[in-house]
Structures are given as C-alpha cells and as structure tokens.
Length: 243
Image (cartoon, rainbow, N blue to C red):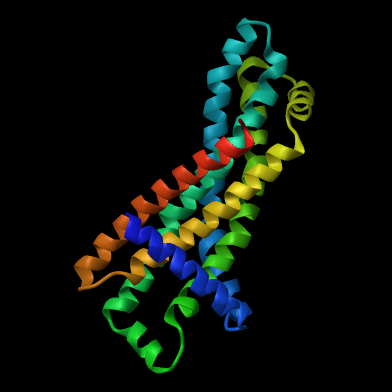
C-alpha cells in the first residue's frame, strides 16, 4: 500500500509537469470528461435521488411524531450536501468510469502500447494520466452540484407524498440550515475524489503486468483501492472542516 501510494504521488507530479509543459491537448481532456462524468451522470443522479428518497422516508414520520416536521428539509439538505451527494456520486463514477480507466490503461500495458509511446519520446504517464486527472477534477464537482439539487428535490417530493409536507416549509428549512461553507466543502470533496478516481485507477492499470487475466484482476483492485482512498480522504476532510 505504501509503495502504491508513492507511485500515485509520483504519477500525479509527472502529470502536473506534463500539463504545465503544454503537452495536454484540450480535445483529449474534453473526450475524457465525457467518458468520466457525462456518461456517468444518469446513474449518479439516480443513486442520489433514491438515497434522498430513502432518507426522507426514514426521517419524515419520526419528525412528524415529535412535532419537528419543519426541520425535515434542513436535515435532508445538510446530509445530502455534506456527505451523500459527493460520496455517492464519486462511488458511482469510480465504479463505472474508474474501472474503465484502469482496464483501458492495463490493456495498453499488456499489449505493449505503452512501450510504443516511449519509443516516440513521449512520457506515457503524462500522456495517459494528465487528461484523465484534469477531466475528473473539473467535471466531478459539476456532477455533484447537479446531484445535490436533485437530492434535495427528491427529499421534498417524498416528504410531500408521505406526510403532506408543504414544499414552502421544506425549502424554508433548507435555506435556514444550509450555509455556503457546506457547498464549498462538498465541491472540495468532489474535486479531491475526482483526482483520486483518475489517479488511483490509472496507476493501478499502469502497473499491470501479464495478460488478459491480469487486466481483470487489476480492474477489480482499482475499484477497491479507489473506494478505500476516497473514504480516507472523506474522513480527513471532515476532520479538518467539521471539528
């Protein structure tokens, strides 16, 4: 794990150096942004909407029984923006796009395409990693921002259907409970998670040796490692900002 973390840090600095030297093309970043976030948008929004609906089902009746139904919207919004939206969106994108990144680069490695890039005097780490890292860092926060809105609206719909909570009371509670700090931190989380997804999965794919069987093993390992690193990063960010 320590060796792998060191490889990730080394690859990140190599990608930054490659981008600053002007080697990263805009069209490559754009195509990777579409593959990473745009293609994962629907599944991310469905996951967040269902999560918000489940939370609303769990808390609405209990809040109504205690006379605290005016706080339902704020409770759902805070949980959604601080944790559910950035975390679940990152997990969905990691499961869909992260594994694809790992499998693609692993396949290039085992079929000697990476060696072919080296013969052209091109840094393979910068060439393969930089567009993916930049695309994920830019677009994952965008998906999270949309998912937060969808999650809050989903909670409002379910609360209205289950206990008849008026949308105005729901949204009033949301505005009272939320702060701009919560939104900024959720976008910071999404930015960090996006970098981790692309970096960890690409590094795992790049380290693959062997044949087709090893590509599958590497892809599975990339999904596990990216999830673990995201959870650790989530804990550290919460520790810094919410203590």
